[in-house]
Image 1 (cartoon, rainbow, N blue to C red):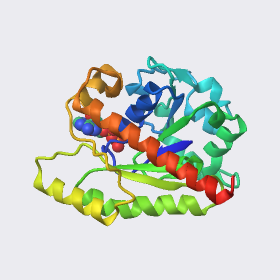
Image 2: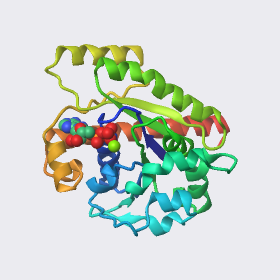
Image 3: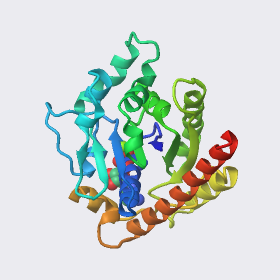
Image 4: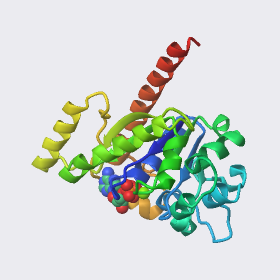
Length: 268
Ligand SMILES: Nc1ncnc2c1ncn2[C@@H]1O[C@H](COP(=O)(O)OP(=O)(O)O)[C@@H](O)[C@H]1O
Ligand SMILES: [Mg+2]
């Protein structure tokens, strides 16, 4: 299963969520890969992977037809793997827009399929850039479903319209899988703020099916774990460990439910 972690707003918890949820699943015995699609390479850094300019990354996979197997690195957490990004991704969107191939936004989908990557992992997470660009379109086209991390503020609420439209556009273009919105995830939530509580309630009651029950609260353990380049969920118990463990359980419930519905619909 391929899950894109996407929101064109930056700093809303995409990389934090991709890494901790992936690590949470790896802790439960699953084989999990995080593909970093962002030139800022935050997920790569967070997972403790250091790449030099000449090391293989997602850039080589997208533009030099490199077999992704050659760009996948093990991490310190058992069962957790990383396909890193580097600054070379800065011009990726521009290159994709100049692409002469028929469906430039299907590059990632085609590569993963050609090299059988999906069959080798229980779960694959795509950490998207904070942009509605051609790189994000590649991720959405390769994904079965999508998690949308979001803040409980007015700007995030109004931005959700564009996020959902981008997901629907990817679902319609037919070049890859039929992407589904797995859920909006409230991140870095501050319970003490009245406006945040009101916005949370508003989102949850407007989109009850499409919002994770789990809320990731603000916790000092997150910046600490980023500093140490180790997923918070793999560190001593903290509120962040608890929230991401809860998210891992809810993710499994939601994805398995989607799987069962797909099986019933296809008569398998
Ligand atoms: N639950 C949280 N508690 C405290 N800080 C958080 C939390 N989630 C994210 N952050 C902080 O917010 C910043 C942005 O998060 P990040 O996951 O990089 O966002 P994005 O990938 O959407 O740009 C990070 O520096 C991280 O330390
Ligand atoms: Mg990020």
